[in-house]
Image (cartoon, rainbow, N blue to C red; front, side, top):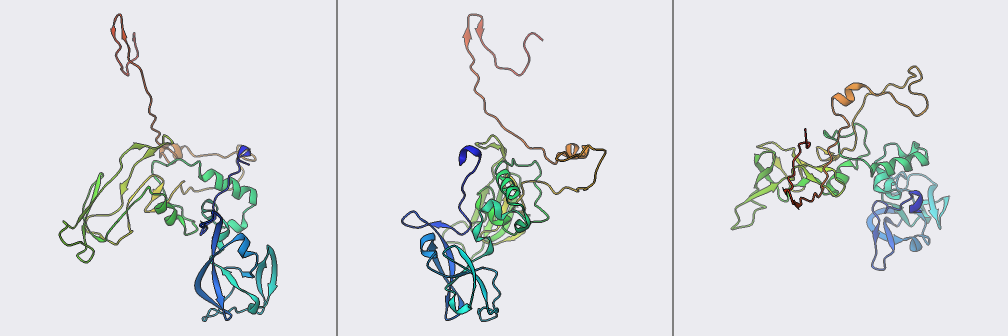
Length: 292
């Protein structure tokens, strides 16, 4: 598997149970009604039940509209009466990983291309000016916040001071603990090397006087724009032949893309240099070229 580039990722909503098995949530169906009760089932337990799809049509009371519902039982797909259904999926994206769930119109994608797209997202380096996608799937904010590169407000309040290096928030009275100052200071990470030698830089996205609630994004990190994941750029594309220069997989790129630094990224590398004491005196570390 891994030798040819295949890796396994956990699906959305999945978790490990106490025995180390993967389990995933389902909505329980009680007396023909889809309830809000969530049961986690492992693959073994799931095979004993009839499970409806997440996008099955329901009425206001949570009952199935259609006479026959598309379900699966023991891995087989079938149509059955609503009275036979035990559980219902939580969301259509429950079957895919985080990377695949970020691909818009995944259902119209060729499987090989979707796999390549999901794989290449992991290889993206942060752009100099991140730009959130115009077309997304709605999970970009969750991914960006959970990645830990953004700064979130621990308590709600009023933004008192903002500069490139820190955000100061005066905490709401109801959230403040008695005897505390009531001020939260968030120091931002500036131009730091990551383990992948890319640049980590946090930029504040709030202004002085803004009201923030607990959990709001205060500063963007690497590859995020306004608290959303932003791995690439929104480009204007022409789909046309151009003197054979874009034959098959080739593309033509405007010089403006380079001039505007659209796909430029900063990489920081840490190197160790030895300075010795020689017979002629100690060596000097300098950026000048010797004997010039």
